[in-house]
Amino acid sequence: MPPSSLFLVLRRLRAPLIALILIYALTIVGLVIIPGADERGHPVRMDFLHAFYFVSYTATTIGFGEIPHAFTDAQRLWVTFCIYLTVIGWSYAFVKLLALLQDPWFRQALLTQHFRLQVQRLTEPFCIVCAYGDTGSLLCRALDDLGRRFVVIDLEAARVAEVDVAGYRMDAPALTGDACNPEILLTAGLRHRCCHAVLALTNDDRVNLAIAAAARLLNPDITVLGRADKPATAADMALFRVDHLIDPHRKFGDYLAMAIESPGSYQLQQWLTGMPGTSLGRQTEPPRGHWIVYGEGLFADAVTQRLQSLEMTVVSRLTSRSAHTAGVAEPPREWTDAAASTRSLSDLIASANIDSALGFVAGSDDDIRNLSIVVAARQMKPDLFFVVRQNREISQALFEAFQSDITVTSSAVVVHECLARLNTPLLPRFLSHVATQNDAWADATLLKLRTCVSREVPTIWTVELTDSAAPACVDLLRLPSVVLRLDHLIRDPDNREAHLPSVALMITRRDGTELIMPPSDIALEIGDHILFAGTPTCERRQAIAVLNVNVLQYVYFGRYVPTSWVWRKALNGWKGASA
Image (cartoon, rainbow, N blue to C red; front, side, top):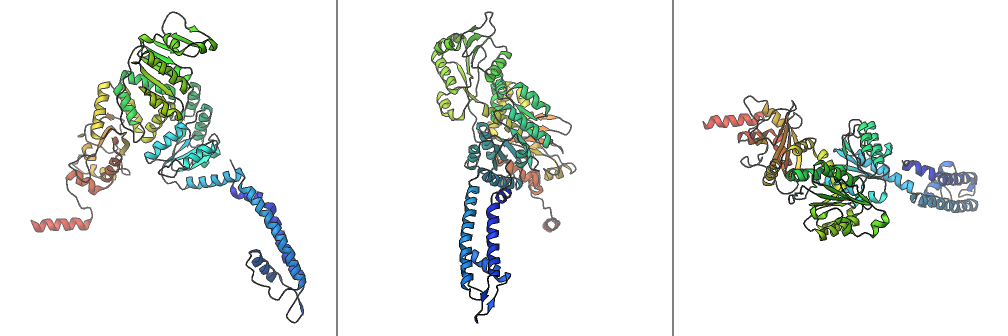
């Protein structure tokens, strides 16, 4: 970590500062020693006060005059010599200062100090995003759209500079540094009272493990989300009690399996954890049957294993070295890279029984290879269901032009998982219920959300019926013979006859009971946690009734009830007079 800017200034400018001090001290001593003369020609000596005063206004280029008497020729010669000497001293100091300003360590120290002050001034909950690559930038954009604060750490200065020009609605402190360094994490606010999560999202499993270990050891109470592509890394992260491990390859395999078994559940899950501002697209329905998976590495392995776990008819695996069909008696046919390079893509695809295939997954680590083989496969069989892996964000235009049925990026998978955990703790629990429901239930839930909310990704929030989070609701629930229902919380605070565009997804109670898609007439209890989905403005409008007892009583009773003693007496007196 770079030293403080003050330390660097004092260390680098030590010599010129000492030189200037000696020059001015020598000037003062010379003026005291060299005799002068008064108006009558009597010899006089300048004392230290007048010498210091003369040097002070001379050094600042003010030029006040010769005091207390006119200088003699000897004094003028001494002052002339000292003037040129100070010019040399100041030139030396300015050269050193310019060299210091160009020093990358000094500039990094200034940026670090500014970053530290920015973090210390944060008064809202924020998370630390480690790495600002494709995944980090996409997640930061989503957090900014949701109104969530974040702090960025990245090893490359160019990426940190992108944060300043990204056009976020809120200031996003960013620091160039190695997130594996515990001092960097502490500078980023790891122990800040408002820091609630650390996100280790780099492409290096070793770095993610180091970040997760440091975050857990330095702040055991903080939420830690880590990306782990390899099972061994995931096992090591589990030792540090990482709250959620994200393996984008296996997670997409789970998504694809869900889309095959229950397309509605897949669409519902993707929609609830989608990027803010995006709309609900057409429902994706991958076929069940013979699939071809092309590619090498963790992604292709994870997708192949997950498809085979669904007891598919057959899953064919194609790589640059081999083409074989899983589940058949004959062993896979192997050939060398040289032979594979001379073999056309059409021949490679034909060896996987494309005539009987229903789906095709292009999952290599090269975007051009993926596009090339799916173009060849589409020419051979246009009605295949295509799943194409996109590795780099800059290839977005190419994949949009191809128009595959599903385009998967590791960054999008990671962002979906992070948003599900960062939005509200109840959303992952609701999504786990979604995964167990049938397609008819998911379609009905989607229809209700589209009808009540909109086709855009909804805002997700939680209402806690506690004294601190919902005082108006708790006060009303404590009244005798009062039953507060869910319907009261989704009514418009300006017009109780209308409902807010929101849907209650789940209610959790103090005894651990979880109610999925509860009816609007259900009675609420103190301690309930309610998960809502609605439009961006709906959360703010609902908060008016949850926090303001007057508004809630209007929603409940249909009239405004005065809360102050004066207004209650005035209202009762007016009612008595009118009677």
